[in-house]
Image (cartoon, rainbow, N blue to C red):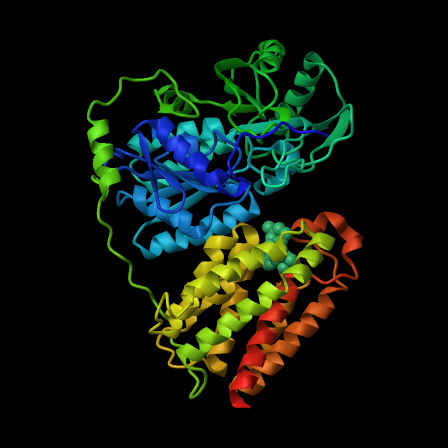
Length: 593
Ligand code: ADP
Ligand code: MG
């Protein structure tokens, strides 16, 4: 299939350049902070702050939802990739007025991991964070597992309501309660008729047989209910709306939709579906609700949640009670969605300029929270900070050299990007660990820098997973004078706990955990032996774990849809872990020989 040419400069710069353009389009109402976040210029002091965000490429969400009575800030990832934790933290800290920050975003594994880490980092800087996940797509899981659902276009009314509620919310918890209610009352279903294309590769985001329509398909082409033959607007609209109405019926946590109820109704185009098509569906939808005695309190129609030039449409319903009706009726203004545009704030331009020129006016100073550090055992001898630095650089060289092997392993079982992601991360690590760039005074700082280098450059789930591997040193290495057996054991065991907590995978799911868990266990068992002996046993255990991963059936990540086909091949991330630990062992062996 031939795709539309894209009018861009470089695919790799697309996310950054679109944010620059968006700031210009906001014409003073918003400004950019940090790596790639957008923040409202005049946030009312004392308000509870609202942060949204997600990957780029779905414009105008989420970053164009910042504005008057809308979100206060948005953390923006690369194209179709979750924002890295530092981006989330930068946005959260910038909008925090000292009364807490509500994180509100779509339920995707990569987003959850990165936002959770960003929340931890923001909390270290004094912010209080609560998170609500948007999971409105009824096609992605049954009502009994509705927390597993992904977030789609229902986010538009939810963020609009959250923005209004955040203006007067007494505190973070009461805002969270109102937003949770809006989420519970919002259900969506989408369909896809043709894929969009990925800017970096020009390849389609999914494949669909000619003449077929993917009912319930996600915004990136994730599996839906079923593929059906292409049909008419009049036929498809009630079929799709039935899924929403049935879901209200089946979900024990909400009342069925019934005559006399009021709803907000959203028709979203995924990009290529035209306003003409949306309005033709609107005609049928209006009849559908009228027949059931359901009042459409307000309507939104347009391309709000898109996936490049993907053709497809989604419907979202939010049932509104008096409280939600009032919040909905509050005027708002953002690039994505505006309602009864208010007069421009005359003061705004001067204030924005001051912000762009340095410092943020009106943002309350926050005090850093003291970190509670547990007492950990320490080794008597081991590597110096300089030796540990050189060891990590040798690990980086090994990973960079293994890029073809890692790419191939991920091509076999995943999407083929693991080698390139690891290479990108470890190139950044090498650069940041260069003695010409920084001088490390502590082991803690060294490992923190190594972890942050991966976390902020790799993106996606694996950025968090492999970033956590070294970032665990930030928690376990304080006061460590050397890198010995105890420090190695604490590092591996802490990172195992962090990766399992953040990613939800367990041993046996065929991920990097299957190499890390046996390595961490061995490290703990032989912790009192010399580092040279311990690290070689650890490397061996990781290698055995990687070999054992071949026999496992993938149940997490992208490989899970391949089922039985995954048996016989090792997990790409497990190969990476075994290379990392093997290289560390070789470096240590080289020191004593
Ligand atoms: P992506 O899955 O985003 O394409 P990569 O290809 O870079 O990321 O990395 C894939 C590897 O990441 C997998 O081989 C697996 O080892 C690891 N991984 C993915 N998800 C998880 C998770 N939830 N927990 C632990 N490891 C994971
Ligand atoms: Mg991959």
